[in-house]
Length: 279
Image (cartoon, rainbow, N blue to C red; front, top):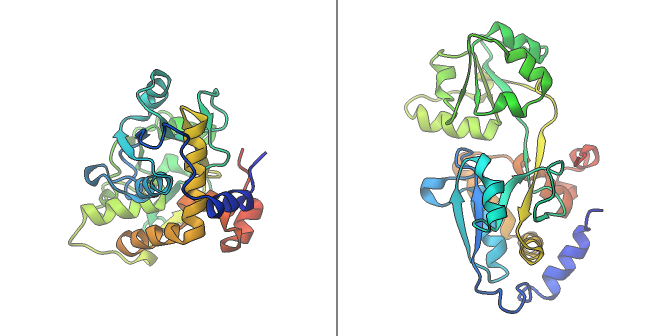
């Protein structure tokens, strides 16, 4: 059962400084992060939208945080070994190691992105077989059976560690598989001298529903402190101030944190929040 936003807000407003248990206030929380999902994680600057929100949530509870930027495959092993205290890419279906957050924290809705002038429409995922496709690493594993079938034995399919968004404009690929905010970040980084109007791009929602990710913590106290911190960020407006910086600098949407908005401020997206199924 999900904990209510009202309950968390009450905790945050009533006792914002009481989060750490005795002896835990100075204990640094080590968080494992994916390193190739800019602008949510900017490992070379120790920042990013997700990084700043996690840091601020723990800071509101007087708990310092350090970040480790690692491949996904190592996160669970390091959590079990005690090297990490928290990871950010857990799903509710995974075996229970540690303590899962009571609600998802982030949301990835990947799309097939094309130049509208070349591919104005995609009716379904099977049409990817006709085109040169570039996707993020492990996309074939993560995006379901239909996607795996559409890209199996595809001679013009590849997966990249860093999203080569610029390849779309340079006509080196026909389709990019990416979360739109991540695509836009790398597009602007890679083609600094060339600008493209948003109307020139087509976003095809043919990959199925997006995926929610929970955070997993080594101890219950760490999880509860983080959740109190998130509630406090919403209550004080600090969450919006962090988000507004990234909207200004990188044009990100609120979609990445739709699950948090639905938990703490559902009036922002009432229709989306009604239709969301966490599991």
